[in-house]
Length: 214
Ligand code: AP5
Ligand code: ZN
Image 1 (cartoon, rainbow, N blue to C red):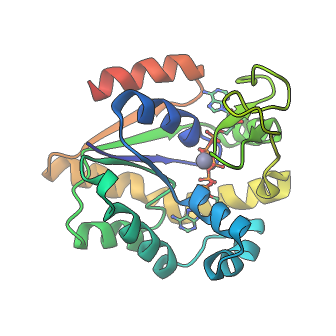
Image 2: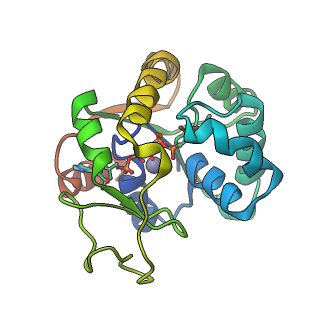
Image 3: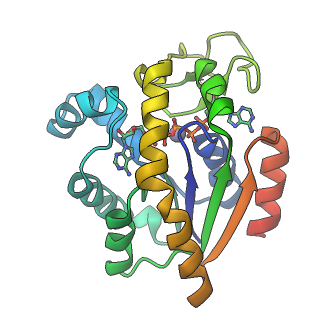
């Protein structure tokens, strides 16, 4: 099963990825998490990506395409995978198509921009795993601590309001065209495109996705 999660920053891709990955036993490939791990480790990739990401801009297509191709060639991706935050531009989607990657499901999360700005201010993350919480909508069991490891939760640098608004602008300009791209693909192939109302509760979306994917 090969799944693409499509949606604005803060639409809930990472939150639902956690659920899908556990339920269906396929790895989550979050390009954002991979880049943040590279920054933390101080690799050349991380050094290149840091400033661009902190400013809410997109990392170059070449860099990202190389990263994803390398990741999906690994053994644990043989049975399928879940792409979270990729593709994010038409050239990235074309690169997957050219590499012969057939997408089974495109799940589009729709959330209005103002709701997203509200959500981001309450987001807390576990940097080691990418697990995501919200102070009000999806709180951890113990305040400020990750449910699994007990590590401290952190705030993402790019969650500052002005950066979130910039990321939303880039989403509408460069990523939203992928909705029509995949709708067209769905019309001529076995790819299924599903639009999900991302303003529902986390649990309601979990259930809807379980039905779509079963
Ligand atoms: P990335 O990490 O992919 O960020 P993003 O796409 O901007 O998405 P987010 O992680 O911000 O949001 P999400 O949809 O995962 O929402 P979440 O579940 O956390 O990318 C970061 C940066 O890396 C980019 O800006 C770019 O620089 C670079 N990059 C990454 N991929 C790239 C690519 N392919 N090409 C080029 N550059 C790339 O939820 C958000 C909050 O809402 C949380 O607090 C959560 O608890 C809460 N929440 C979730 N669901 C609900 C719900 N149903 N109701 C209420 N609250 C909810
Ligand atoms: Zn995410």
